[in-house]
Length: 83
Image (cartoon, rainbow, N blue to C red):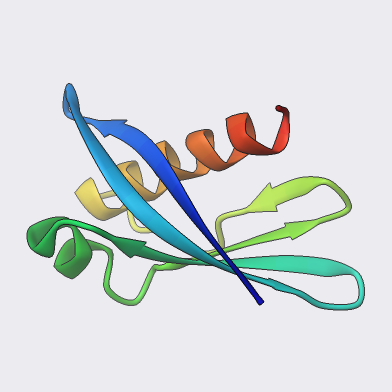
């Protein structure tokens, strides 16, 4: 298990999150903890992003602010992976 800090932008404001990274056989799971209480509550129940075959899988994401937040975090994970 690995912990990684990331920065992301949401609604024109910069935020930070911690990723708990679990590498399994054919996939990597990113467990997200947002370092902002309100955003952390919003993401509750949708805090895992999976990477399989080099592609990030967001899982079922509601078409709400929680979904947009998760997409912004996924963009930051993608940038981090491409460095």
